[in-house]
Every structure is written in structure tokens, then in C-alpha cells.
Amino acid sequence: MTQIVVLPHVELCPDGAVIEAKPGASICDSLLDNGIAIEHACEKSCACTTCHVVIREGYEALDAAEEIEEDLLDKAWGLEPTSRLSCQARVAEVPLVIEIPRYTINMAKEGKR
Image 1 (tube, rainbow, N blue to C red):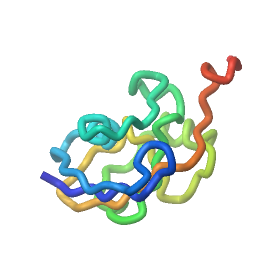
Image 2 (cartoon, rainbow, N blue to C red; image 1 turned 180 degrees about the vertical axis):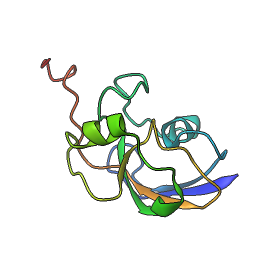
Image 3 (cartoon, helix red, strand yellow; image 1 turned 135 degrees about the vertical axis):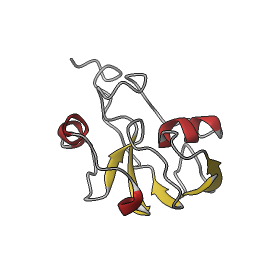
């Protein structure tokens, strides 16, 4: 199991959390399995940016993002060099520290197409 430290998020995880994740599982599934209700509007199909996270530690241990993920990340709110879509980033054997951005862009929820 790999440790993921989730930094505090006002709505989803006010006190932060330390969770255990199976290597090979997505960060999104790992968060959801541990009661952290990260948004995932496209049902984890790499078609939106609602599950955007910033990897604060351990980024270099993750497999590189594929082109489709990188294209979507360009549309994410608060994009940083270590941003990933949590539905696409797979946990490795290296501990991670992640931050869930305060805001997300959800076009369907906001009535835009």
C-alpha cells in the first residue's frame, strides 16, 4: 500500500487526511474509496477536469500524462506544472502529497456545453 497525504480542502476534507492506496489504482478511486468525495463529472473517462489535483510530492514517480489528459488539463482551473487528472494518474509505490484545488470547472453542472 502507498500512503497519500491529502492536504486540507474546505469542503471535501477540511482537516486533511492520510490514506492508503493500492499501487496501480487511480488517485481518484483511492480518494473515493477512502470517503473523500472528489468530483468526477465524466465518471472517470478523461473527458472533463473536475477531478484535477496538484501533486505536491511524489510527482516524478507517476507515469507521464497522455496527450488527451494534457489537453484537458489546459482547461483546468488553477493549473500548475504538477497538475494531474486524478482519474488518470495511477498510484505508484512512492508516497504522494496531493492538493485538491478549491475550485473546479464543471460545464454540465454550470449549464454550459
